[in-house]
Image (cartoon, rainbow, N blue to C red; front, top):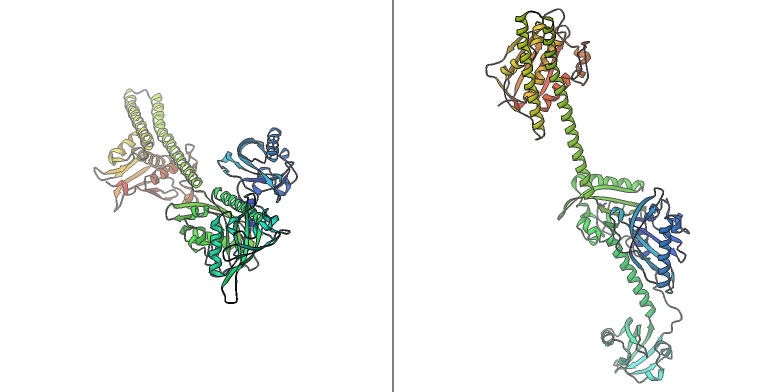
Length: 635
């Protein structure tokens, strides 16, 4: 999500300046369940992911309820016991493996949970909070979320400051009575003593003296002092050098303030910052803010460390200008990413998109981003969101699609092969049936001998067809088609023998125009199927008023072998049926043997081998099929 450059500092530049914003951002987008409970284990706050796991539409619906309202009784009882233990001992429970059912579906889920005691400003335990990672989907939460404490940098009331004065040798010449409460020392013990006796670390005094010599004064300079019982007191000193009329230094005068409580608060804040930082680093992907201005400038005011892994760019490099990040978007996706952001800028609807980035080290990666936009007073829009790398999922989707394509192709091959088997064997079966029918009716020995010869030939051709079909099965398993040089004249003689009974009984005249030794590079089973279909159709749809005449011509043009088969049959109404001619189960005559498969199969086989087929026809005059066998048909 990026466009343009931010040249000027916006009033919204420090939008993440306080912890509450970062906390809210985590509560809204982190894909782990986060929850806070009081001392009675009642929910006082949960994040959106936790609400989703509980089957709630709004996290506020959980407030005041307990785990007994959402989990199995034994599971809820265990969580309650753990939380009471934490409240009693103040000790956290880290990475507890839990199982149970949740939500309306009642499916078993596993998760790792870390729970902690929750303290108020006075250090009292007021409840517990925790984070649960759903390891059912292999998402592991390694560190729990701590509630960010409220800001404590405030002026502490009722703390008495200490006034002091020393000479140029560091001997205390004056100090206020408040020192007694401050350090436990009696005022009289301190006056006349060297200040170095009261420093917890002498390096602090050396740094203070160095700064006073350099600037003549210090303000809120932190040092570590010690009490009468050698306890550490963090102290802030504001002081200046005293001089006489001649300008020579005569001593130091200043105010000391106990900042021990402030240091404790700062330490807790640092720990809180560190916890939030580590949590954002633990989350797969990156939490971010993206801001776009009305003039098109854009920037990332905030991005967690994971951003660098996703874009191979440091978050600091895009804090004021998103240009470097937009240049990482894949060129084919950049347009739609920019368009989607522009649309979201105007509609303020939730933005979500999957797109690719092209990285210097990792190459092309798929990212999924989701963010919620917010309109600001200066007219800009800022998105609070989350980006994750989904390359592995996209690869699995591609593999699945490839598998489906392979299965689809195999199904087509299987269907095509089934049609070949059905059609080719049906011609042989029809021929044998007709010969047997004639033999049943003949008593003449010479005629019977002739038709037994036809029956023998038909049987041989059937075996050859079955053998070719077996070769197709073997070669299709090797992802190739059975292609070899075929002598066209020999092949047509084979077809004539297969259809010999039909040719004789229907008084068919076949005219051939084929050069001697003319060859064709082709699949023999396909060529047999094509010729059988086209020639048998010419016989089947012969004209009732004249003997059928079939003209067969083979020749080579500049690029491929061409076949023309013409007949003087009943013809086809091309205006009516032309666009349906090669459709499956389409018939255009009242022939009871028509199945509507032959021409569909023929066209499929021709195109599979890289060729094409055309047809010209006129009703009552005849039909011409022209087959172009493709460039591979020529040796």
